[in-house]
Length: 292
View 1 (cartoon, rainbow, N blue to C red):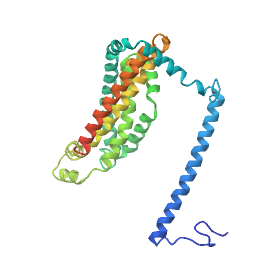
View 2 (tube, one colour; view 1 turned 45 degrees about the horizontal axis):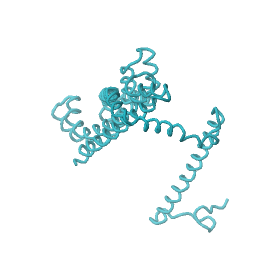
View 3 (tube, rainbow, N blue to C red; view 1 turned 90 degrees about the vertical axis):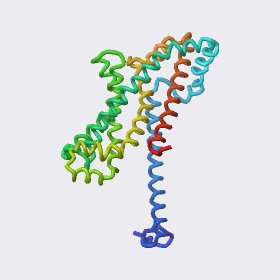
View 4 (cartoon, rainbow, N blue to C red; view 1 turned 180 degrees about the vertical axis):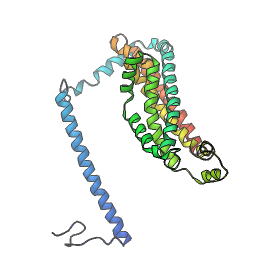
């Protein structure tokens, strides 16, 4: 069989000892893999759209022109009642604070659990290396289960309220941060550990004095990023009865017309809160990681 992959001449192959040909060979391979992935992606998207279209109650494309109708109705009603918006902001502010508190408590609990998972799943830092696969699979399972599924189970057991939301978000956060924390710890310098071990320091002292000062900026940066995500997650969980501003948004949408000014007020509060915490956490992450 004649090989004409790498040129017009039959049987010609690249000389990988030549830097130029080796580079061109890598470029061709990347392009080939990229083309294959693109074809698979387009095929999966087309297949998924076709399946969703078959199972949908109505035709998506024929109803596409009606997409702006609902937002237009919401905004027009809110504009007509725009004088009431400042009062609605104050009305829903306690619910927003509850949502932020849920996210903060869940991030704190999930961060602490994630640190334990990270130290247990990092090979050269684990106190019990034989249990490293167990820690890793535990983190995989915790971040694989969506928060809303955990919240629904906990609401069935504990009833509605913020506690199921905190536990559900903390559970998922622990798995996600455990993975990120572990990757950061993998790159830590082990020389401080060797020095501490030579002085007779315990495992806990080695971690506290030799590893945590190195990884603390990255760990705090990851935790702040996760806090932003958890604010959105806690708002979403309000739709299933976990309290916070998401629950108020669910009620306002259920009432329909006449309550759309409340919908706009809640969305505006959420947007301002997320934007504010995004800017604050970005500033804090830059100071922690880059020192500026």
